[in-house]
Image (cartoon, rainbow, N blue to C red; front, side, top):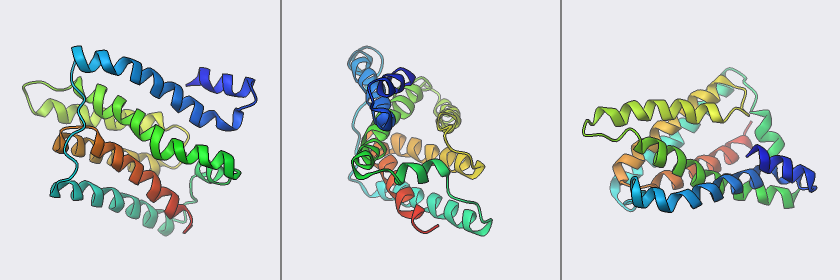
Amino acid sequence: MQYATALSIQYGLGNYYLALGHMAGLGFLLVVLAPYHRWVAPLGVGRVMQRSSAWPTVAVILVYLAGFIYSKLLSEPPEQWVLDLLNKPAKELSAVFITIFLLAPVGEEILFRGVMLNAFKTSHSWTIWVGACLVAVLFSLIHKQYNNISTFVEFVALSGIYTWARVRSGGLLLPILLHSLSALTAVILIHFY
């Protein structure tokens, strides 16, 4: 991702570093995905349209509402990085939205709830939950652009929800959709600060 960022700046596309970095990462994952799926472990779509899919959806919204209320009660300002992203000109903002609603959810869910979580699948059911905890912390740590500790806690909780959705649905589509819902919820709530 840093290489893509450097290239985007070198060629005058510095304002699109987020989208270009995620496209580079997703491109790499897609190249690796076919052999991984065939020889290591399948990464299926899963079952999205079932009644139990509503629970993780509600949980995502509740995590964001709890974080919003917490921030309001403690007068914690919104994340500056998010404000900067959402105040870009329309053309750049469209690249931001493509990134946060599509590229990041697909790429991050393939990596975290797909490849990394699969490393913890064994005949013992407890190992997947150990993996879920480790993946949640790693997921939060890669989002180093955020400053508030409450955001770190939110990301750990969201990662747990995405993992729960992955296990319940048997695939990656539900976590990807929930990740997109998270981004949408964050964009909506930022306007109420």
